[in-house]
Length: 124
Image (tube, rainbow, N blue to C red):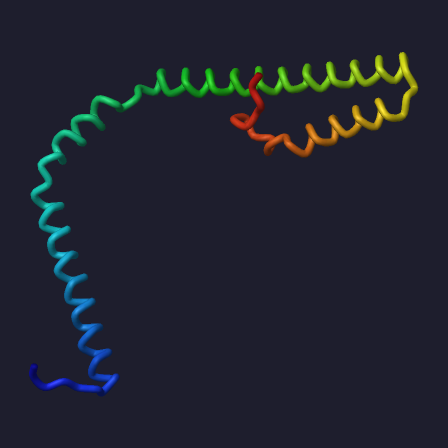
């Protein structure tokens, strides 16, 4: 079979040399592929066509702001509705079990609400 070595240091050095040699070869292959990339022109053309004019960008920002404002307004209206329902139940029945269940629902809803960011609202 040939000469073998049981020296762990020599085995480690050989294994590390093989691993880093393969990594170096892969790095060279990746650099060559990057230099001769046939899709590079297509990506650059797509970037040029997707460039947004300042008017379109400001319109998109305004649309996002109005969407966030409408979502926040919807959330406030929903909270008012929940408060009105709670008040009507409290006024009609003083049953402690119903009030406890309603309080649990309100607490659960507040705990399940995501962060108060414009893009994090529950949609019905």
